[in-house]
Length: 416
Image 1 (cartoon, one colour):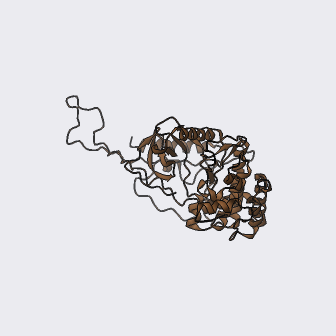
Image 2 (cartoon, one colour):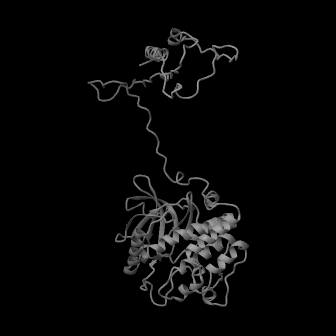
Image 3 (cartoon, one colour):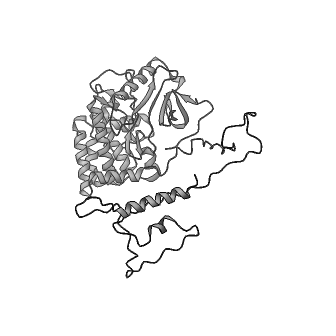
């Protein structure tokens, strides 16, 4: 994900979140990368002061309430919000990675296996949203983030309750992304049904597999005409042959002709399994292929220098002076030797106990080379204490004596 530096006019903090950089913007607001006091990264969305009015606040408050309602592994979670603040803001889970639009622009379209995995994943996510009585209404490549744990859906600013025919949009006004919008949404029909998200998901999958959307035009009016004209078929060029039947059905002009999300999942599974993979394997391949190569957060965070080591002498300060003398030196404790770990054996060791308890102070001698004919050089015992035939742990008297002598030898040579 591209993170731009803050401008001089950007706030340094919102709602307790320290702002580190810009990660997105639109006509209504700005999205910042923020960090909570405890170090939790967050995407902090703020409404621009120039567009804050009663309707904008009402719509923003609706988005906050919807995010409180939505749950799911593939939905960016709401962390905190204040729709009454000046300016209004909300903080959601930060997903480190490119959105689908930027990923395809940078790395090219996805193969059919990964596109089918993406489709199955997003279809399940949207089904969860629909079970909660909501519609996304603005699913597009830029609203699919490809994070380190797989894709997630963001931006529910246009989400509405499925059974509601009431909208905050002014009459004869269409809000959304026309290139991913189904005909009924482009016409302003009410109420909308879950089929609008099925169509948008088909547009996202087509973009992932081919690099383009169903309809493209330089003029917005021409684009709306293409979307709403039943005689103008969507452009499926470049899509893999195995995905064309599913995409054709998902991008059907009439809402009732589109498959349910559960059928989309099953058909995506069929594409995956026809290539010899399981769905979980394809999901892992998708995540590996799309995950960001490195953590970009560390480059934005200021480095905190460690305090220099204290030069004060150990012990209580001089009663006549509140500061240490100028000639104070650092007292460095010598390194301590790690305590040897005794080996529990079932028979006396080849060396005597006294020799083990009194190691030579000179340099260590090289380890002898094992001789298979020498019974005193036995191979190392397996890890863990030995067990007898009955499965009980066995500790011989010799082993206990050896352990005690080793502890005494360590205590005698310790530097503290």
